Length: 136
Image (tube, rainbow, N blue to C red; front, side, top):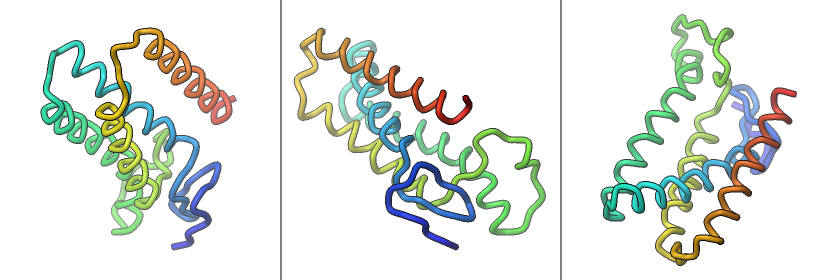
């Protein structure tokens, strides 16, 4: 295992990076998802937190499918999968930043609709930038 950097533009199974630009998207996704669930479904913070952690864990397991198949020498079609080259370290840090995003809801007043609109626009702008950077 080669840990490339704490912060890098990319992460692969062969060259691990803890934090990538996508880590910031995980942070914002945690924050916006928590607000959405709490506002739309009138859910408690505890229910929201547990629901989002379960969903995010399923997402990260999907990301790590090829990592574990390579580690344990099992056959998969990883070459054909889009999001198949992620390291365990990056998944852990993505989850930590996702949790930070959820916890931020407790600290920031989400009653200001203008603030939420600006944050949502920022989120999708950054997401589109990363998608364009990654896939042209």
